[in-house]
Image (tube, rainbow, N blue to C red; front, side, top):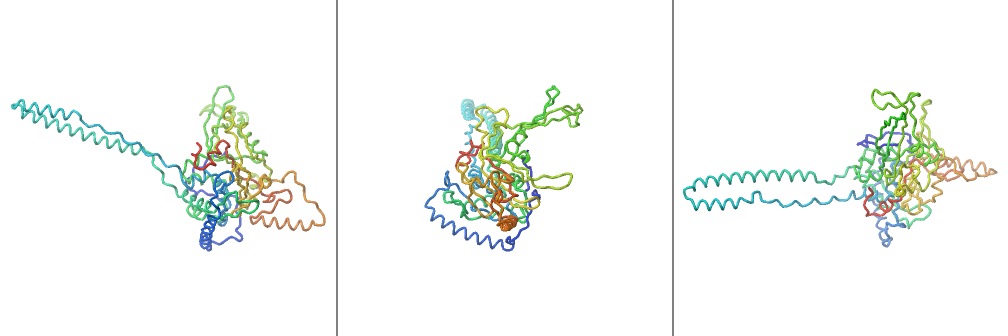
Length: 510
């Protein structure tokens, strides 16, 4: 289980991991400004032409979901591009980034303040009548009247000061609209470029989509991200979310589970606490998403006192046998569920880290009703998820490339491969073959014959092409990325939240 990072500095928190790739044929930094200026001019002309040719085609709805034109790889920013594509193609996430949270309601009007001393007028009238009736006591009454007047003015001044203090305190209690962070403003700029270069899905077909790619240069520069250093795609997203300083957006991804330890000696001693997460890390060795989640949330670990790892309930107490585990409940599930597949394994004996390319099954429709604990009948619909996007890693430890498969409208069956600035519409079968890892089942190997040497040459060229980040087809029972391509991140959308996440203008899910 992965707990959200508390880091507040994205530029200092990124740690180079296992996905560095030598930049071959990449544009040098000296030419980047000229490239961006040229792209900006081209973007304006294409956007104008699109506005004249679309004839009012809507960019929302089941058949007209926006499809990004891709993101330019600035050197080694494929890890960043893949994650941003997954987020951009959820309309509610896109809307929150582009427009921010809804404006705060106006403060209530202050209630009218009553007069400080409503009886002061009557007192003055009585005093005046008394002076006219008794001339002998005029001087004494005059002094008394002045004294009362001074006391009244003092009380009125003190009350006015008190009211001013209370008003200032009330104004301080009123919520204020926070100033957008530099991370949010930078990502908003990127999403704005992506939206201007997007096209409706109804205008695409199987093959390369003709959108206009955007640049993440502003985001990388403002957050101190080195564009020539490849990083971990999952770590990047977990560090970027806190940097945006938008709780409403984080709530869409954040879930919770219960961590517990229960003594087995019949004393009833236990320890329970609520933990939050932005994603759930799964062991690939289990073979499938459901099996891995069942092992994590349904099968507690035994802490045995005889084996030396018993639980000490309190300081000074003897160790006892205990069960340690996690419980997942329907009310703790997020609207967007991200699953991190632990593809990289470190061997403590050999001090070597390697990639696990074993096959790992994941369903297009994920039902967590058997994984959640104490689920009620009316909560079952909250456990159904639909697959929305996949971040794929191709390569081995120490080198590799990221790209993403995304379904812009989770209610349709149109899938796209976003490989940096190349966007291709594909079938779901191609997605599965390229993302599951290992050799695709049910596919026959090529027949050997007189063309054996030619096939060997084509396989060599395919491996060479893929080593530079390209795809190599599905030959030999493997997907587009070849034998080393496999899903690294899975993003699911909770089905009961689809109306809120995919109908722009609706309020964000709670």
